[in-house]
Structures are given as structure tokens and as C-alpha cells.
Length: 476
Image: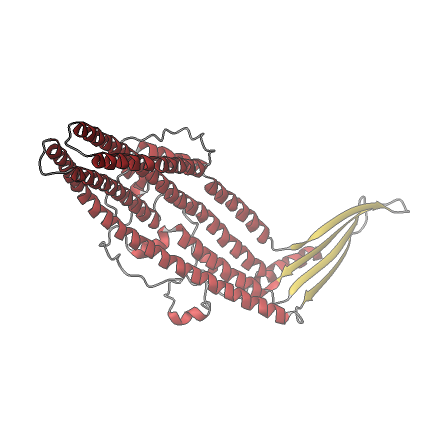
């Protein structure tokens, strides 16, 4: 009984905590992005933004990637690891117990049980448990971050592959057109209306076009291989038809962005950095609590197996880390520096996220304007090529060089149009990914209490030299 009471007393003493409290970090952000007025936050119905492309193949690839991507699978295993660490660090008592039974010379048998326990006072265990809880939340958010990055890489690879397939198609069209020009020139040469130099120029243009095709084919294969790897499948076993469908991905929407402050909630990498900052503050609490005494208990209970009286022996003592104080103070200072680094990393993530969204909006606007003009450019060059050919065949003012120049201009216009469609799709993907859209959000178990209430206060530039003094860790 005395051992039980001592254990309970040690447990109660270990619940007393010293150390910092957590203050939710904040940063001053503009109330809007520079190119768009603030709009309402993205709804659940808008999460699957890849459906805006109306592309069944892309939808199948995204579904397969969410199930098979190895980075997402690794993130799930990191959650398991964090859960195990939380169970380990939540154990308030460390030590061991032994039991034995023996017979005496007088014929009586006895059983004995021994216990050794250590209680870290000043809340060291509670701080460690809080740090483990924050890292578990960060690990759960890590799965969302892995999905966000998967959507970015998979979307980019798919758009690039379709762009190269479109480029291959246009090169084949160019090749057919230039072979036609070469045939026409051979006919004119036989009639004495063209020169050998004109024919050589046309043949050189055909050879130039043919030389571009192998690199484009190799690029298509490389993007297909990339898609297979992102889906966690060996090259050549994808099972999805990636043949060209005759068009490039084009989003139906123009893309909208909420206010920059929403990134603090929607971007998993920002939320991960904030959870890691909270864990670093808890680590600081562990370091500070380690400077206080710990309670050590050891005891032995002996009891007869049949009849007789019980014997209890218990020894309790406090371990005072007197001579270790310099080292412990240094460890606490190092923990404080790590907490400050984590805060600055959170701040860096926020600024980077805002930059990414601003850049995506700029590229999206530029690509949209370019797409609107390249259609007319292709149409005008087609008409100019047809007119040049007719004038040459009829002996008009146009020359063979005019035909070749028009063919080059038409090829450049088609390439420009394909590139603009690619840039528009990539900018749209970057915007959606930059806003943190495209995964099922984790609903965190947040139940703030009066004793652990998150205080939202802006961190001024003067506070950058030290970790804020007040942090409410368990309200996170």
C-alpha cells in the first residue's frame, strides 16, 4: 500500500509543469492579391479542380496516383511512426518491475515483487507528450502535403506530355506541307519556272523538320515514364491509354484566389511548419523541466504464498542535477534557438506561398492573353501560305522564298499556340496547388480550454530575436 501511495504521489508531482506557453504565430499579409479582388473561400465542391479540364484520362491518373503514389504511402507510414512515438512519450513513469518466487528451508514458499520508478518533476513528461502530439498532427498534415505535391507533379507531367504530342502533330503537319512545296518546286523545275537552288532550299526545310521529330518523341516517352513513376508503377505497366486525343488540356474556369490570409489554413506546408513550431516550443519545455529534480522510487514486496504477513520496503529519493546545470542550461538555450528557427521557417513558408500564388496569377493572366491572340496568328499565316503558293504557281509576284518564309511563320505560330495552351494549363495548376486546393482536409481535434487558449497576436519584427514568452501548447 505504501508503494502504491508513493507511486500516486510521484505521479501527482510529475503533473506540475514549468516552461513556456504557446502563442499562435501570425504575420501581416495584404488583404488581397495584386491581380484579383478577394473572393469567397473555395468550397468543397471546388476541391477536385482537375475536373475543370474535362479530361477523363487526367481524372483517372489523379485517382490512381492518390492510391499508388509512393510519397503518399510514405507519409502514411510517418503517421504510424508519430503515433507510436506519442504512445512512448506519454508514459509518465519510467522504470521496471521484477517478480520471483522461492522456497525456504522451513518449507514455506514466498513470492516477491520489486519496482523501480522514476518521475520527472516539473512536467517533463507532459512537455514531451505535447511535442509528440504536435508532431503527430504535422505527420497527418504531411499526407495532405504529399497529395498536394503529387497533384502538381502529375498535372505538370500530363500537360507537358500533351504539349509534346501536339508539337509532334504540328511537326507532322509541317512536314506534309513542306513535302508538298518540294513536289511543287520539282514540277516547276521541270517546267523551267524554278531553279535548283529553290529545290535545295525546300529539301533543306524538309530535312530540318524531320530532324526535330526524334527529340519530341523522346520527350513524350520521358513524360509517360514520369507519370508511371508518380503512380507508383513500373514503366510500361501503366494500364492507361495516353495516346493523343487531338487536344491539349484547357481549364474551363479562369481561376480565382481567396485572400492571402486563407493560405495559413489551406496550405498544408504552412500548417506543418506551425505544428513543428509548436513541437519545438514543447521541446523547450522539456529542456527547461529537465533542470528540475526527479523523484526516484524503489521498493520490494514479500508475501507468503499460503499464510503469513506481508513485508514492504520502499526507498524514495530526489535526484538533483546540480552539477549538470551548465549543460542543461546550454541544452535549454539550444532548444530555444531551435524553436526560433521553427518560427522563422513558418514565416518563410507563408511568404513563399504568397509569392507562388502571385506568380501563378501573373502567368495565368499572361497565358490567357496569349491564347486569345495565337488563334488569329495561326489563321492569318495559313491564309498567307495558301496565297503565296497560288501566286508562285500562277507566276505572280510571290517567290519560292516567300512560300518557305510563310511555312516557317505558320510553324512558329502553331508552336506559339501550343506553348500558350500549355502555359495556361500549367499556370492554372500552379494556382490551384499554390492555394492548397485538391485534397480532403484533416479536421483537427481542437478543443481549446480556458487554461490552454490560443492567443492570436501578431509577432512584431522586434520579437524575431527570441521565442515569444507565452505559448499555449495544448490548444493547438
